[in-house]
Image 1: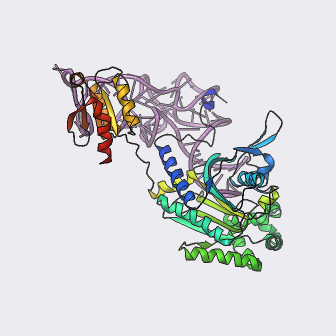
Image 2: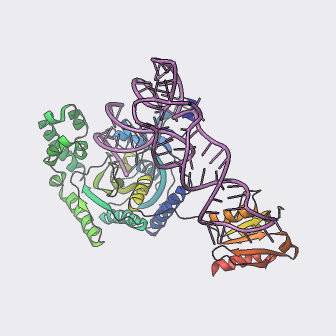
Image 3: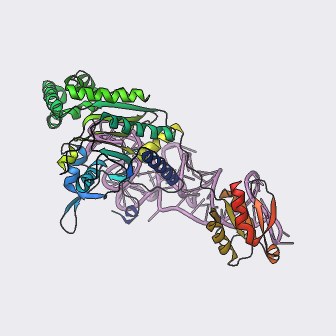
Length: 419
RNA sequence: GUGACUGUAGCUCAGGCGGUUAGAGCGACGGGUUGUGGUCCCGUAGGCCGGGGGUUCAAGUCCCCUCAGUCACCCCA
């Protein structure tokens, strides 16, 4: 690759710079606040794990079979970059055995080797939660409520919630067989893709191929095969959502991409988003995963929500503008001594946001910079006033200015800001 | 991974069928007299026209390859 192409962010990755990065900070802060209110603690797990941890996502899933960034380290270990948030968190649960239910949230990057386009990147960030160690349907409702409320906090209105139940192991076993029979009966339509259907019969259900839609519409539905307990569990989740006034649609063909899902699965779609990448968050139950990783039997549920896509949805709906990081006070230096450095230090130490223009600018340019920085006040260090122990304090909004004792200026502005 | 479209200054874009020193707006920087911003006026910098190869007397304009972005499939956040 040419040197010119090497010194730029790799395909499918991006830099997030100010002021856009301020929106990230805002989004994460709101999620953290909400997670804390729901009783979830922050969990931080490695960005890479042993390959086998992520392989539990499912050998028949694209994420594992063709999108994993795996590699051998210098010690010959087979490792992989995290492709999604749940597996590593469950590994940590199985390893440390915290008391259940264990409720945690995270913000972390995920890596998938995919063909990038808007809203789909090789490195993307997710906020998410996992609640491990309870099979109570009320937890399902709590988790969905948390994510639903998060989107509302951001100001998103055009968000749609889809829910479905994958049933228990027996349910899925029976359904898989029925579904597979159905696909085999339509081998002429599926063609070479029948092999994929054999691998994972449910994967076909969420295909968008136009000439398959008719066949998919008529396919047997999982809901008809739910066992008594599964149906009751799903009913209780729906009752809870209705009680909270959270509107949702039952999506019989929503199966989601990971093999570990059991019972409740859900997805939030941003309707304001134009393209095919309209899933902004999704998750579900994974009642067997902790046990498969050597932990105690621990039914669990969680979700992940993609930061880039949520932000795209915010753009599409015109909400969550980048918070302006305006400074409180700007120092104008007309004397060129170390005094400006000292004054800035004092202002910052009393808790003010303070800044100055790049060195060597004319006084005029410095005032201009103060204005562009959105400063509320300017403090000028000037020869004449300094001689009598004063500095010039100017209100940038009104243009009024007055002299203030040099030693009193920091406290004076701090007081002004409070009022 | 498959198919299609796009790629000109930091940003948004002009550059009729190839023809000399590639333009605009915004932004940045400087100036409009001694120490005062937002408006206005003037000026300056900044482009191997994504990269490489080819056709041609001549390529930002045509062809091929490549890189990247975008759209769809696949899949998902």
